[in-house]
Image (cartoon, rainbow, N blue to C red):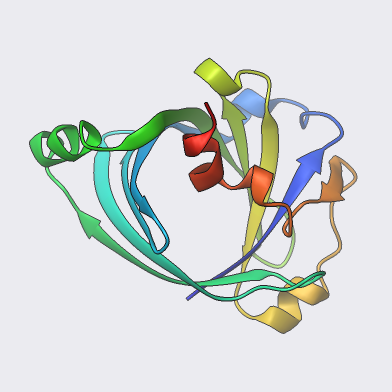
Length: 154
């Protein structure tokens, strides 16, 4: 189960290069349910996601399953992806109580777009979340910030 919220940001955190990061490339084979292929650094992953809950002011809750791929399988499936291939650098920034902000800095067609996601252990933790000062608007409910949607933008 994946429970997450998304935020725009006011400014990049200081000393961003000191945080763990990786280049990500991903393509979508299907958007409902989501079937995605991803290169995360040197890992290759097939992901199945199906939304089970979402609502105004609440987190997105997905069933999510990930399966490892070989590089060859990834490249084969990537060639079958619909729309845009999403390219970004993801920074993993520790927050409090074991929470981590995944800050995505996009490349290519979406150069300049930056937003952060935080995953939670349960809905209660997500609703009690106090965002850091570098976070801005909660865009969890805005589908425009979905990578699946972005892959379909012409």
